Image (tube, rainbow, N blue to C red; front, top):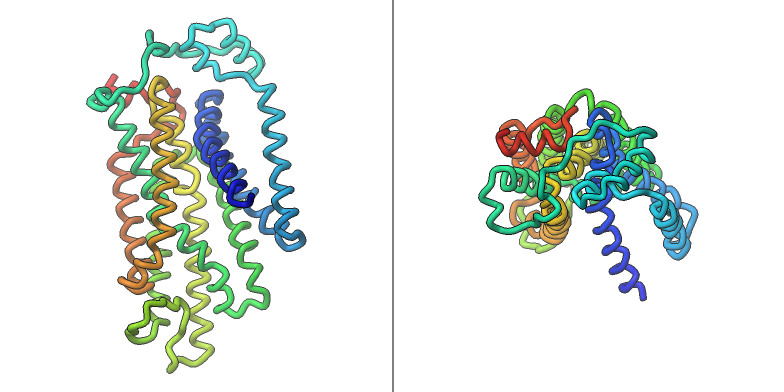
Length: 357
């Protein structure tokens, strides 16, 4: 029963992570689309923080029951939400589109028509020859891959252990501290998204992650003992010749690096790939394209989670985090060279940009 519940929960989360950003991007004004699109990730990290807090006082069975509450509210409230005006216009349901705009905005707004014949188009592999299709595909898939290759899951896995090494009295506070940092910086990103722009925040986020993962690797390099034939990688075993105070001081380097990394990730590479995924694809391929992007994200998360221990055995922990730092460098270069700025543009203008119009 537990495995069946996990399967259904994973299916529901996968669908929600695909549909929610797209729905929000299609019902939002260009001037606030960044704010509202970033709120998807903000709600995720708030939910994680609340789960951490609830875990202090509830056993796992009641946590599972509590998880039904937001899902139930979402199911009920979505019954009263309209389909997006863009989708309705592509189906030639203009009257319903007008009613949807009235519901969403209180008055009928000026709206750019989707391309003629969009309702008859679907995704075909031959379309990948067109710049308006293959460019967003490359950008969307790359953003999702770089998000996971940054090392976010690895850092989160070892958060509590790192706090223990720093001699926190209650190391279980680590999860809550990490959750608070995520919420604060994701909220900050959401508030400035439509003023600072996506490219600037992605670049800033990547630079911060480069420095923090490099410092993380330096910490592990300083605290790892000599080479060992053991297949088990003990991440946080300090050198025996170091005094305890030195070990604790180095652990604070890890704590600082971890907090800096999480803050940097939350400002850019946490919310923005999901936001850009919902903005850059033409309407007639958006369903397939966003599905491929979400699949890439979850597959890379699975791959990094499964293989990170093996990478640490081969490269040692410091090498594994320096490898993550290298991926962060590539993510910055990719952002500067390939990712367009979508701030303040309508979805139709973004599509026209990729098509060269």
